[in-house]
Amino acid sequence: MTEGRDAAERPPAGVAGRTYPPVTFEIEPERVAAFARAIGADPTRGVPPTFAAVYALGVTAPQLFGDSEAAVDFAKLLHAEQEFEWDRHPQVGEKVVSHGRVASDVSRRGMRFVAFETATNDAGGKPICQSRALFVIRR
Amino acid sequence: MSKRLVTFDRAMIAAYAEASGDLNPIHLDDDFARTVGLPGVIAHGLLQMGILAVVAEEAAGGRPLRRLACRFAGVVEPGDTVAFVAEPAGPGKLALRAVNQRGQPVLTKAAAEYL
Image (cartoon, rainbow over all chains, first blue to last red; front, side, top):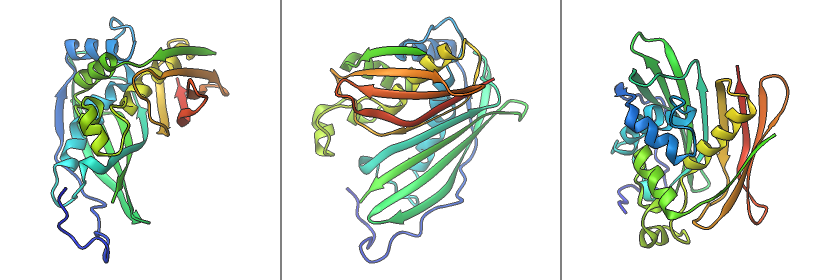
C-alpha cells in the first residue's frame, strides 16, 4: 500500500468541502432489472429505491477514491453507514445528474472518518435523491 | 410486520457486484479478502440494505420510501442466513432490523420513512 505521508506524527489535513464535477447517468432498463433481481425485488416494478447506490453513490464515490489528494486507501476502507433521502424515485430511461461532495473528513485515534454526500437531480435540476455515506479508513 | 429470511451465497454476492458495479475484490476473491483481514468474501453492505429496502416497501404497503438509513454493523459471509424485518413505528415510519442466524445484528440504527 502507498504510504507517502508521515501519518504517525501529523494526520492528513483532509479534504472536507471538496466537490467533484457532476456525473450524468442514464437509468437503463436492463441495468435496473438486473439490480432488482440481485436484491430480490420485482424487476417489473420500476427503479428500486436503493438503485441510488448506483445512480448517486456509485457514480460519484469513484471520484473520491480516484482523487490522489484525498488519499483514500481503498484496501482499508469500510462503508460504515449509509442514508438515502428521496424527493422522488427516478423513472427507467431518465437521465440524472449527481454531484459528489466531501461533507467532513476527520481523523481520530488512528481512524479516518469521511462523510461523502451526493446530490442527484433530474435533467431539469430538480432534486431526486440525497445520499450520505460514512466511510471509515483504517490506518 | 414484513420479514424475509435470506441465505447468502457467492452467486448472489457476485450478481450484486455485477449489477451494482461495485467490483471490490473483498466481495469476489477469497484470497484478496484474507489479505485485508476478512475470513473470505463478504456480502456488500448495500446488498443487505437493498434487501432491507424491499422488506420496508412491503411494510409500507407499496408507498414510496422517502428515507432509508442504516449502519453496517456486522460481516455477512456466504452461508449466513439473515432475517430482514420491518415494523411500523408511527405514522409513515418503520423500524428495521437485520439479524443473522447467531442472533447478531448485521444492520443497526436502521429506519425508513414513507409517503
